[in-house]
Image 1 (cartoon, rainbow, N blue to C red):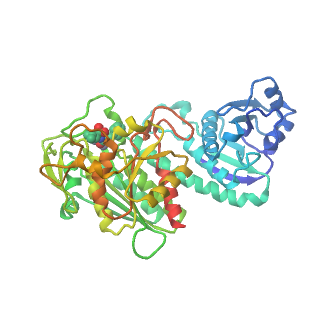
Image 2 (cartoon, rainbow, N blue to C red):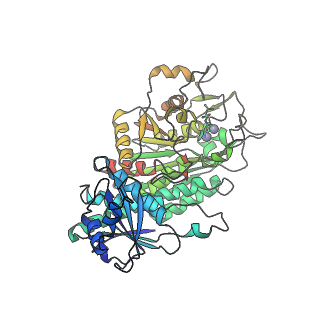
Image 3 (cartoon, helix red, strand yellow):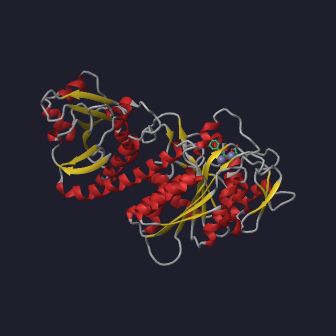
Length: 502
Ligand code: BES
Ligand code: ZN
Ligand code: ZN
């Protein structure tokens, strides 16, 4: 799908559908909607008067134009109450519109810039949100369906029509930016939705290298022997049970130039999590094909920052492996040693994400990262705490945390900070090693314990940990979020890079 901005008159747009909007309670539409109403001889106001259109949020009403406009149909989208309307509503509306219009015969839609009229939002922000919402909302994962039929129908062009010529160039740049953010998210979704027999660590490394090539980024892939040489005993302890070779993927983009890395993005890349010897129950285990979302999100976010030409040096580090039970697998009670020398008693082999992240975070530090943000589907406990409404964030640095919170908010993603009080350090004390990989004595706080385990590997480097396990997979479409892999955190990470580059 391509999203463009053109100067013009919405009533003259040559498209398969024209999209306009209506606030709740408005009986005489103005702006672009008013112009279309006039072109249709008052059809929209008549539908309002008849009570078939109220402007409620989420409402979509189709009106056929019967030759009065070049486009055969007009879709009026409800904006809801004016005082509740914001840029997130624009993004979600664009996504709902694309899904409602997706059918054979509709290829090209023309829309007014929702929000930029009487709502008074910044026109460029609106153009970006429409691009993001359209591309994110149109996402489907059909590659393994032999007979997807009408589901394959795709909207190819979304044209935002702006009458004021002086605004067009800025809005076009914003739509281009939004398109890159959404495309990165859809690539991450594709990887997360891909079954583990199709997306092994080896395939992830190949796909990452292809993205790096496209965007002119550095790429390095460490093999098992490299990790052994570097002392990454924690990461390797997870890979031991699998027949698939682990890969530690590193992408680098030097947008600022010079030495050093302004930001390292580190993502958990478990291409399948059986739990290992501490094996998971069968019910819903298939969802664990997506336990590499953190890795996908950091790789695609760094790729987007490169495509946007952001002026910062950014690293993406993705430790990728399966977590399998076998005769060679790590056993509960085993003690392993991470790259920084810290020893870990592996109490539960299903708490494997923190084990792969530990060495990856050490490596980010060794490479000279000034800031580290890690992203992981780390704990089921985060769903107990926060459901599927937001993701958890934990940190050793208030200032960096505020940056991440602001970046996520700009992406329309809710976050919630959990405490890192020193009392929780008790939970991970081990009798035989420097720490244990799960909390002792059933004291709860599973999400915080995961972060507490990671904290010493970040050391003094400003660090934020995102636990996205609760929002990573969705059971139904909801605005910009589509069923299956949601893409949460990709645009937040890109926004973070853009903020730090300023
Ligand atoms: N990948 C899981 C966490 C997860 C659960 C992600 C559900 C998405 C949906 C992680 O590796 C795991 O198994 N965590 C354990 C930790 C426990 C053993 C301390 C968990 O949450 O049960
Ligand atoms: Zn696990
Ligand atoms: Zn896992």
